[in-house]
Length: 242
Image 1 (tube, rainbow, N blue to C red):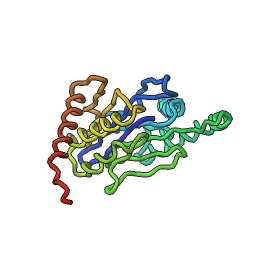
Image 2: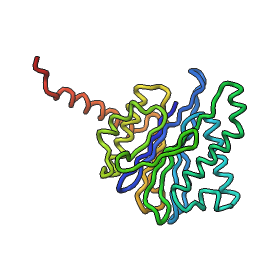
Image 3: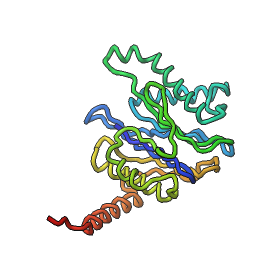
Image 4: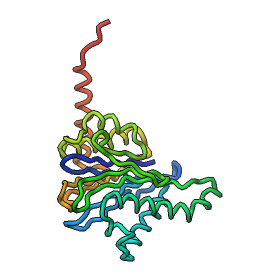
């Protein structure tokens, strides 16, 4: 299992992903699930992946290979819009599925790879997409300013209560990290390191990027104070009158 989230705000975007993968209780590993395509003053594209590790890595590999070949019409460096980016990612997913799908089905394993794709290309506003394993996708908007993949249910309540398009980047970043803390407390299949990017609108450069590993001082303090604050608020709730 995994947990990834992309948030689109008026002032910028937040992307975060955990790094735990598992193929059983005794086969747990760490792999980065965040991929960044950055060309300063032109574009920042962030991909968050979830699903079968071999499938997601194959899709990222296809995208990187197509960027290296140099055919601008068919790679992320030449995409004119973020919609084109989403289409290119979907095409790569379908190409991998066509190649591997039959062999996976023979072993009763389906192709399982999905992505959150967001960022900004010069001349366009911020855009955020959720691409499903079939290759179809939806785009975030005013009513739905964020997308999650993987183990979403534990981190969703705090996001729903706090984040709106007007939320400052600093507050949204804390909220996203709290959602990871809540998820990891309730599900062992999600774990550190956590990769985090905070992108400022129209900067066309990733200036704020962090990785939080086990024992990170800031994350530990955030988790402790959130827990203490929650208990304090709970104690101050009005008593039920029977």
